[in-house]
Image (tube, rainbow over all chains, first blue to last red; front, side, top):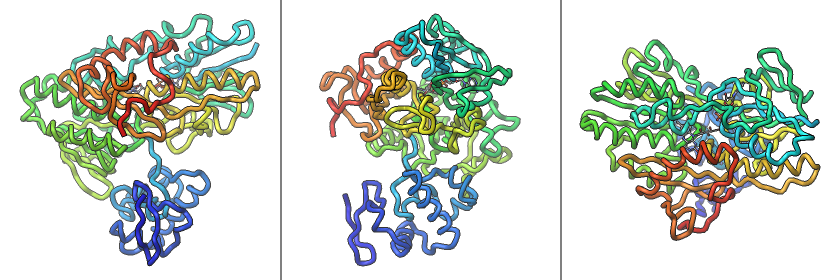
Length: 105
Length: 409
Ligand SMILES: Cc1cc2nc3c(=O)[nH]c(=O)nc-3n(C[C@H](O)[C@H](O)[C@H](O)COP(=O)(O)OP(=O)(O)OC[C@H]3O[C@@H](n4cnc5c(N)ncnc54)[C@H](O)[C@@H]3O)c2cc1C
């Protein structure tokens, strides 16, 4: 288990490099995590996705798939990819301080 | 008489029907299976058809030959499940009531979900191999193809048999080598995943094999559309990849009857308790096979392991005893790697595929995550086991829950 310093605090990360403890997350931490992913600014649209993901996770215990995000968050797939380039579901989960979505293998 | 209704008589439905028919008292239980089709397809065999290794005859048998004697078989399309009233409506307006229901309607491909995928050239320069028609059309195409850019694209996860795309690539490499045109074929694997496979150790090993076989890999590519004029696939962030022939694994979704019943998630998969395999919402409904919303692989071997668990829990549930059997997500897949060799992976919800020996620790005869001739024979034997043991609900010489014995970690 790797620990890293974020905003002067040592935080623990899981093997996928996602935040380990949900309580360590706050909006400032999210901004730092986004920077690590190359997202320099979090806009209202980013927050809409992040908040949707957190709500889903709290209710269902699992971060949603891209398909679910598109269907229910009101953000189109195309925009999701521009907000969170490459893997939107995974990246948004990371910034939202959630574990990697458990897509099927 | 108590009524058990099984929806879908494919791999999972047939296995569980055979097991429960044997165990339930026939003077007290009436079992009915509903399926729209009379033919059982050995789907793992579809993989071999494009390369002329199997023909359609090798993968088709009448479903009835595998259903237990004494069950009622209804050939009709399911319209929807009315779970509140314990009944199922069929498209032919028939209504079937039940005391217990088992859902086993599987998952199927939906190429229409991707813009431009099915147009006039569907099954002409763009193919799937997850249907018999697609696999046969591709076999015809390959027979006279002289080479060019072959792109294999996974549209989105999850898909059934997630190793099948890799096997396709390995077999394509061997096929074009044997045809003497491998140098004219550029094989390119384009996936939305961050690597060749989802789990890190297997992903690394399989990625190395791709490289060794000179197969190009593009990761994190989310396909938005196909541009048929330019013959390119285009990602959501406007990357383009050119193809001469596109082999696609389209979006996989559960049956639309699940959607009509209001019982599915965004992929029409049914909310299932991961331990007991009972529906999360209805205590007299169980779910098995590809149509569950579990994160286990969607594979025939998984349906077999699930059947052992469901069987135990079902027999307890109907007697109002506590359910004790717990599914661990066990999956076990042979991966054909071409030139008469193969690999094997064995894993579950918590343990990723690891190297080692299987099923006997240290002995095998199969080797995990390693290319061997014996693993290839395992894959060849799987077809015999499928028709003769697996579908009939017979014991296989492996345990239903995964074991760590024999694995290196
Ligand atoms: C190319 C390929 C390669 C594969 N390779 C392997 C492998 O090597 N090893 C392995 O273990 N697995 C493999 N699989 C996966 C395996 O075939 C499936 O996981 C397995 O068949 C799932 O069983 P199931 O009963 O859930 O679904 P199916 O076997 O698909 O059965 C579903 C049944 O439900 C019926 N049905 C659905 N909807 C309705 C409706 N509305 N009305 C009436 N009937 C309906 C269908 O007609 C069908 O008979 C492969 C699959 C493919 C496509």
